[in-house]
Length: 93
Image (cartoon, rainbow, N blue to C red; front, top):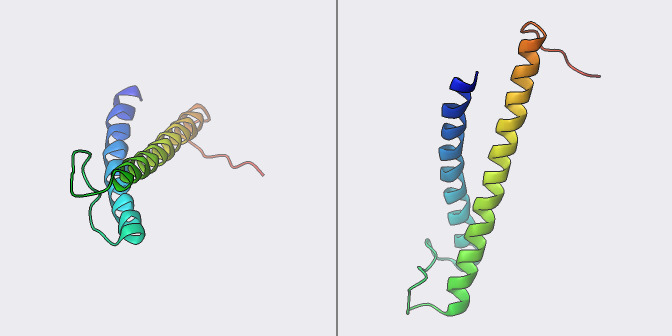
């Protein structure tokens, strides 16, 4: 099981990174009207815009990472519990 879990969580992390990037782009575009956030060393943008972009990007990536990790952990638990019961899913309630 551990052999399969690592590649699947890596794939989920990559997909989560892609999702976070797309989500950040949409949010940034909605907030500022620009397609990309200014890089930290940009002298063409205000310090406020650079810091806002960095904070927003960090928050979105952290939230998506937490969601992906949580989903992976819950899926692994569900799968291993299912295997212990002989491969049959048992629903509570």
